[in-house]
Length: 359
Picture (tube, rainbow, N blue to C red):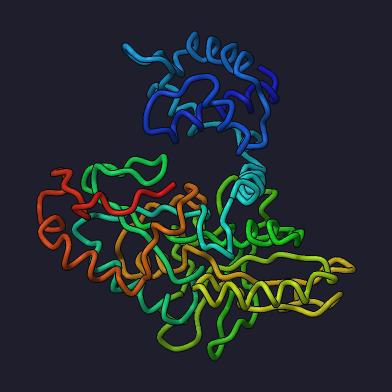
């Protein structure tokens, strides 16, 4: 099978794997746009007939649409690396473009990361995350929580797990785009913090050459030192490097003040036109900016020995349904103290109001 056709099949399987139920050909076609693949629903149906024949998908019982099979999940997991390369950068661009957040009205959707922890350990995880927010080492001042059996956008929280939603740094891309400021995402990396300030990048992974979000890799590789940065002012955190036109620098500074005013600040450093930033060269006529990783609070949880499962750029989410991080303790301890102590397979809600539905 040629590489182009295989890439489309993998993208279809990924869309079905991420869905919380059966998807029809039109829905799949819409999902594929996030991966930079434009297929009409008739072409998608043609590919679905192929995946059905290979046992990778099946028709939903009594319902329209398709479901991915265990064989399909295995195929997705074992997909050729060449088929995955570039998915991160294309998904970043697609989600940033699809954001409809209005800074003036403070309504609309932002890009959210999804992280899973054992539901019984959610209060402990929140305790570890709050100091990271206090030091402004994440993306903004908001998060969301969801318990077993609930949904976070198009993601279903499995039994025994609690989901933590943190604003992804890609949300800044969307805000820049809608403010008329072109932005180029270069790489994600480990940023060394020294005396509380951004000092230098120690590791970098370019977005256009990776199938995984760099911070996901660093967290699972136990390479971060977010808790050290919070406690001592020196440690390694997740951050990303972007470039904007030098002509847009004044507009950027104006936008940053507005974002900080509503709790969406994330910039750690802004360079000067045509000059390197933290020893990273920039293209002529551009300015470098360093953005804090949205998963940094969750990195502190992993560092403390609490296993996490992270999906960067997990979904689009309504900004108005987020909660200030300072309210997270109350949501865990006051609303659901008993749910965290019950059997992990009980499927009880972390929040009796179904918490926040992330989209």
